[in-house]
Amino acid sequence: MLKAIIRWARILTALTLLCILAGFLARHHRYFDIAGSFLPQYLVAAVVLAIFLMLARSWKWLAMALLCVALTAPRIVPWYVNAPEPKDLSFQRFRVMLFNVHQRNTRFAEVMRHVREVDPDVIVFQETHETWFAELRPLRDRWPHAQHAAGGLMRGMSVFSRAPLHDLRLLPFNNPESPSVAWRWEHDGKSIAMLATHPWPPVTLEADESRKRQLTLTAEYASALHRPTMLLGDLNTTMWTPSYRDFVSKSGLINARRGFGILPSHPMDELAILRVPIDHALHSDDLIVTECRLGDPCGSDHAPLIVEVAMKQVSP
Image (tube, rainbow, N blue to C red):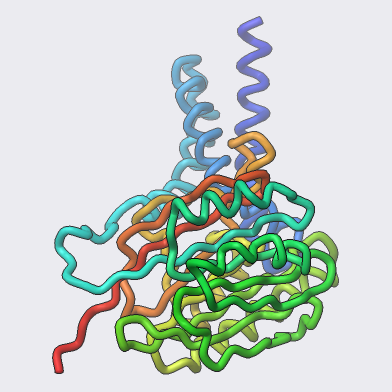
């Protein structure tokens, strides 16, 4: 029995290493891109396997498990360190909320109750349609400035805000069925550029190419904004893929998760071990994140991302 368990541990170690190595080939095929998105799962598996193989005195296979740890841990651990200390910051703050509610979800009242509990200044709802926008109408008592952007195939988007949505525009970014929304938002006399987008998941070759193109165009647009900037969206990519690395390189934006953990947000209707971080908030370097966490999914397959942002006051 023990020999069979050891044999399976060795097989799983080899498979884990193969999956990790496949992630390094992500530019060559979308399946490798998807494989590279599960880096936290590979790290957990590698640590468990390493402990078992050490106890079993299977030294060569232990070395392979430790190689898996070495290839994954340096890309996971930095997300948990160097968060700013809110007590040391004297900034004006605001809160944003990104919530992919899932178009077929009908728990409207629960979603609205959770939004009121979080009490953000701006909410971006994704995968909404006209019915969703109508059901969310009661929120306008506290967030009177609202706009819905219709989209095809579960790609509508609704924005609710305490402050006016200045210069609001819809941007196709090569995907008119999933329009992105850009606007200018005023907070304590300062202007902030806001951008929300939702590219396709890489379920087909065409969808993968569309996603990459939309991320590229979105990053180029964000990089040209000359003011404090925030970008919110279910980007259908994790922080370990070439698509994501290219995106942050082109946009110059920083992920709000930095220092707060990987915060896996999808799929919330599946086992926790399967979840990955694909819902993102990114910001320019003149903003500082003082809180980043997940909220209650309220029937969605995504957990909302809640981010508190500090903006430094400039002396006159």
